[in-house]
Length: 316
Ligand code: ADP
Image 1 (cartoon, protein in one colour):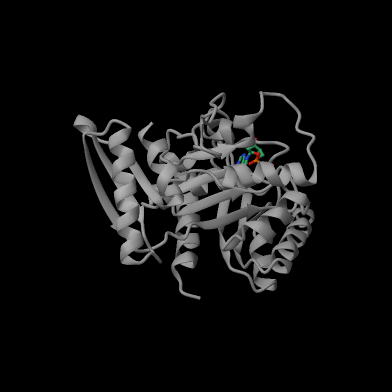
Image 2 (tube, protein in one colour):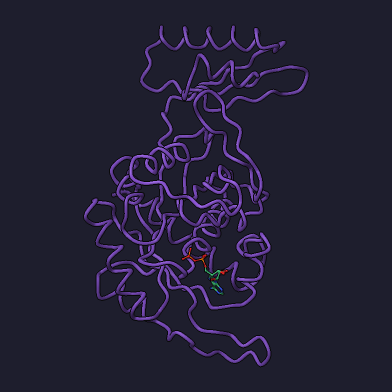
């Protein structure tokens, strides 16, 4: 109620709305670009709205900077290469590294993030015209088409409807999230185009298995981003090197190093390699992103997250 009332007058300038103890409302407003008079008027309006909504006392902080929420797209040329797994674990790893991250599952045809992030069956609430992201147990709020449709229900929308759906997911009340990791559907269709034209990502992470065919597909996905003038942050090689759970011996069911070679040949950064590990599959299916735990898979995801953050933090 408090949030609704405050957002009713402050809209997206309400960066944080919190009901503290003893009915104290704590509000953070983004006032970048407003002059003194407009700022005072906004403060006055939110104070009144909060008091009317039942707050006993209202504390208002202002930040000058309009928060620029940055979108990182995770894409692949084809399905089944571990794109969703990487997107989920990248978001969790970045949150572990202290960033405020949200996760958007734009894989509208096969939304798998609710299962990966243990939020299956949850329904996001709406406030005003916008959705409120579903909190996950890993410090990453998220929204997925899977939260909006019934389990097993097929989605057969096209063009404009898809664009609308994507809009709902991205244009939500993301609060203080500074980064949005967006899990794109595989390939180069409508959703990807809407995404590139409407919500331009700051960069894209491309996931590929080491197989040649997957790499050729990856090259197509890279082409799409480059056409849309979205820089490629780098390539991640997934399912590289199989560690036998019985004898510990490493083998390479899909070969290894193919993505790194491709990255080098294309002059793109190589962000790291995630081993083929049955524990990754098992934990992911059970709603425990490996990046939230310990061990080699967590380290692999955290190292990739560091590489992505280093890219983001480098002035361009
Ligand atoms: P995509 O989003 O590209 O379709 P997913 O992330 O859904 O792919 O992964 C496909 C399947 O492969 C899932 O069952 C997932 O748990 C599994 N998987 C992904 N990465 C790995 C890995 N490194 N080791 C073992 N299994 C993996």
